Amino acid sequence: MEAVIYNPEGKKSGEIKLSADVFGLPWNADLVYQVVRGQEENARRTTSHVKDRSEVKGGGRKPWRQKGTGRARHGSIRSPIWTGGGVTHGPNKNEKYGQKINQKMKTKALFTVLSRKWRDQEVLFVNDLALTVPKTKTAAATLKNMAETIKLPSLAYKRGRRVLLLTPEATPAIRKSFSNLGGTLVMPVSQLNPLSALSYKHIIVLEPEKSVKLIAARQAVRSAKK
Image 1 (cartoon, rainbow, N blue to C red):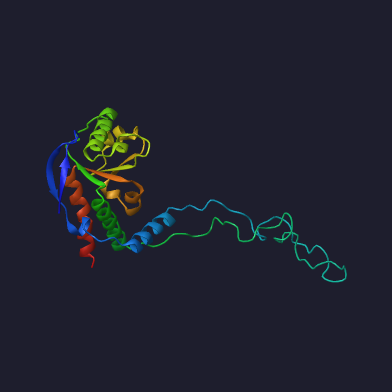
Image 2: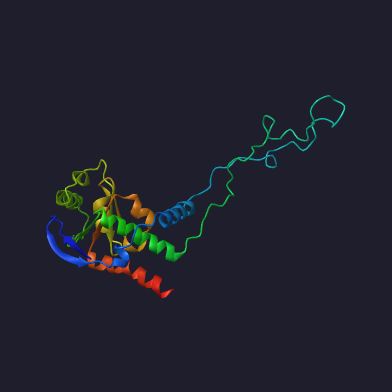
């Protein structure tokens, strides 16, 4: 498998070989759903909380005797059926939503998503984006040139644009250059995961030779653990 590498002007500057184990996997909806759902649950923070009958202040005394009044029996004025009582089955801050995700599953799900995006022509490889200082103008021009290359005008405009840019390592200059452009996110390859890959329509891989090797290195780690 080979892919075209573009320069910031949108012109072809070379080719890169892609591993079929990373960019050639068949779509597995069940696996991707399980991993993405697990990521979302693990990121969930339980802050909402209501008091049940044991947490509401008061209500320790029985409101009236059990028999002889003609009224229904009650044991506490903080019962959920009373006004001012506790809440039944409400949100609880102590509830646990986390799910365990095996590393092998997470890696394969990521490769499955990348394979799907590669087949849908939603992965681009760009080289020679040398930014030592933040330059939003250069970042905007790069997206515009890519939009003309792949015949997708929305890539050049904020409205409707969802672009994830991958770098081999954390690069503050590139991150700041694209931070002023709406609908974009710069992320090191080491932080790439299935959820972030699915959250963006297009993925632009910067410094492809290094980035692709780092992505493929996860496959080597996964194989070594078998």
